[in-house]
Image (cartoon, rainbow, N blue to C red; front, side, top):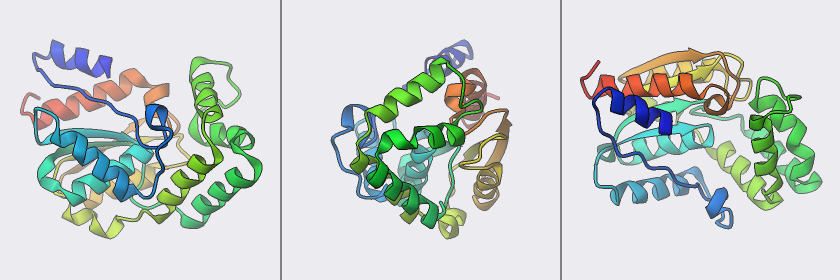
Length: 227
């Protein structure tokens, strides 16, 4: 966020940047997740309280699904999307199985498999992996299961042609959770879509923050007519 703000400032542009915790995460960890539509409603409620509307939304993974749902629900409120490591449809059986594993074996038992899906070097003793491990340690089996089940029910593939706002899809070439094909599908299905590639796994914003900031900044500057 800070790097995006700095890049925009150096380009002579002023944007208000806002971030929040999804239900089941961070300060909102105690809130139950019912569906992606519920999370999209939360996003739109937050957008309604911002001073600038419509807004540009950046979403990674689950956040990317929420961003798509919000834009499809209220297109007049969303100026553009930047989607990272996400999909317009997730494999339902795999999502439900992942939810069940967390319920049966606990979230601690899912750490190794999760790191293998989310980062380029699961064995690294670094800040990124430490951050993920700490976040998972604070996740209850209930919230874990709710998140995967919500993703399993999410499917907006057939609705994407109705999405008219500009969409930047950022694909990680090492991403096995949301492979490049998933981002390419989004980019080619919407009215104004483009895809860029990063040498990163699923959590590209943690592995390649400067590159993500570069692409998101250019996306915003292009839309505002300054590129």
